[in-house]
Length: 364
Image (cartoon, rainbow, N blue to C red; front, side, top):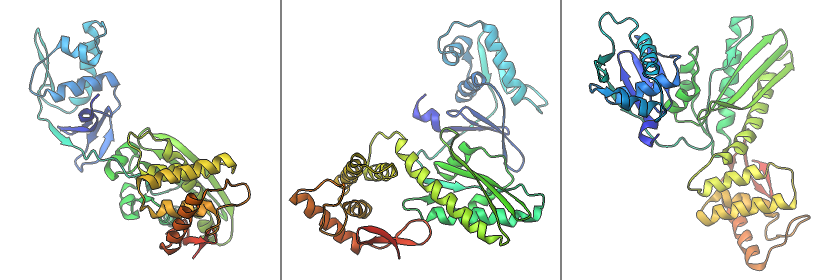
């Protein structure tokens, strides 16, 4: 399927059809969408018919396109047409959306509007924290679930290079069926964080799941339990733990995404992910190499300079226990990077802000 197919959306008579994703949604009077359950073969057939709206499509062409040249009986086509009509014609008083052209094939007769989506890729490390569900017996505890959502959004936004959708926007998805792929397209994010909160007396349980919108796969899930008399102590503790673990998970997962043209940020993310592995000379050398490659692509990258400087140790000292020594030219380069790093502004990382001091990240 070509790139155009993968981004086309068709609107017709109370339906929205995402051809490339093979997704069909029924729209209510308010414009809210609900997914329609129907087979992939029928959706492929629908894609061909709506693209040729108003024109007759022969049975031979339909079988060639939908069944990709496989030898099938015409009865199989009739079954798929019937399945589509049962869904599309529900509530229609006259005629069918799909007209039979005797002796030839079928024609899609209702007006169709093609909507071109913005095909720009979602930013790396982009996420929305959906409103956490309140599973407590007391419905009044919703404020606590909302507090978890807001604090997580704030904490994640402090992670370097993280693009986080605002709470105001995220809360518009409250009490709606969750379609992570649709949310990803609408908000332009790669990841969705969803979860729930249950409180019983002094016992609090928070569950969270990280979802990749491109594949709808769960990348990470965790459950947090705590006891306390002060409600806001566990809220602060839980959001901090989730943000820390989630930040590490996102940084580790992002380099696994395939990319045709690696840029400086790709190598920085790969270096950060490699740095999460148990320390060794091999890991150390790999991290340094990745940051060097980032700088080769973007010599002005302050982040690459800071991270390379932090890995190399104290200012103008390029030899430390377990680390490979550097030659004169490389040593001069690292010293220069460190001097720039010291002059650079503080970098948000988790709660608070951090900068390099004596070769290590410290709170400022």
